[in-house]
Length: 305
Ligand code: NAD
Image 1 (spheres, rainbow, N blue to C red):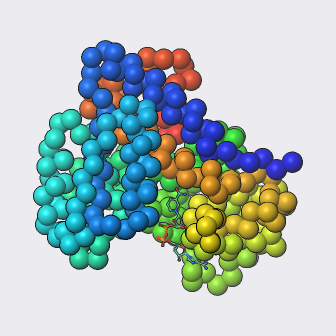
Image 2 (cartoon, rainbow, N blue to C red; image 1 turned 90 degrees about the vertical axis):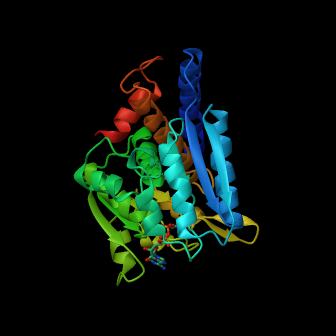
Image 3 (cartoon, helix red, strand yellow; image 1 turned 135 degrees about the vertical axis):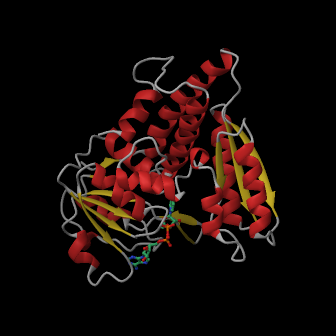
């Protein structure tokens, strides 16, 4: 029987651990963890993503500060806000929702965020830590969420063929590095890959992150594959992934649903990164107020083998 990799259920339980840990800090008289969320412009999808992230933070006791700037904001104006948030003692994490309007230099903005507050993990210093396998950086949220989900379901990665379709900056590329940490053999495919099926058919674990609805079909996978569907596309009034779920499920040993798979794990990973930043700032690293299976251990496991 195919196992459904239930990111919603795992997220719920991780967030409950986090909520209790934060509650503990508050009862010690400490300030709450705080995330500054910056949104530029009025892209409807970005509004939804930002609102979901803020609600999720608030539910676990993380204070969410929202900065909404107009569509015509300049790079300089955004850099000024980031400098202010970098300097603010009570802000633990800074998230600038991407994509930014085209007049803004995205690279400059990412570079300006203090790497210790870069809870999205996009700053070159944190990406570099990922390359160097240094565990004290921030891992980008979607790759971290996928890793936690695979770990939770005890999917063995060592020596396995992990094939990632989609080599974007947010998902595919950093995930390929993380899968190398796990000692998998990684293939990273993209729009110019000559024959994607040649790769997908050899995958023990197949991750698709392209945003092309229904790209991965049953004939493209082998029996027993573990499938992680990152894609989000709107088809009519439905949200669907990259994977033709019903047919691929018949061959897979395990598969993520869309919605309810990677999406909630991405938001949970953001919360974990904010907590990691907060712990570091408050001198709480390595301390654990609750049961041994607390989030401290989950985090340790997430960043270690
Ligand atoms: P991106 O545009 O940065 O990258 C897309 C990648 O897919 C590129 O490498 C491109 O070459 C490749 N690609 C596109 N069409 C292809 C095709 N036909 N065959 C093979 N490769 C193809 O996008 P992204 O930011 O990495 O996001 C990818 C998808 O993942 C989107 O649908 C996005 O909404 C979704 N996403 C979901 C979550 C989540 O939490 N579930 C998080 C981030 C992104």
